[in-house]
Image (cartoon, rainbow, N blue to C red; front, side, top):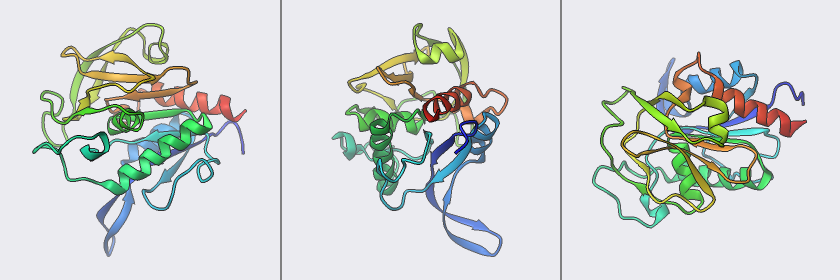
Length: 231
């Protein structure tokens, strides 16, 4: 494998999808993830929530993105379902918890995006607020949020003291898992980023960096970490 083009796995989800003559269940992913990985210098590999993911089955990867999407089943963190929490997608929950466990075992660089940051937190023993206001203005509409970034963090190295991000979520981190450090917050206190202490690059962001193809800093940092690991 060429170290100049690290293989970056990206989790996907199963949805009923129409294309051409077909109306079938398919593994789908917003294209922005693929374009960001390619423009950042990596080769994207789509990982559907089927089969069994483990350190053995993802050992060919150089890095991992846990993509955004549906609410996590609150049973995964010992909570009853809130009336505004979406219906469980346990196939995806199980697949992504397994991906996180495998990636940490392999010391893979990881970027968790929105739901992906929440998956990282829950996989490590944290919990979620099942509904908050102000970060999800309307379906398909992103809220521009100013965040402050903690110094002496991987995120600070990439984005600096502060930046504006695009958010689309109604859940957020509640109890932060042991080992995770909060590295950014919104003005209302919502956790906007975490990273795993002691890991070369395990970063979660509550926002959607794949929405801005002109700002590749997070994806470039992931790809560079993957390149270093591959070499």
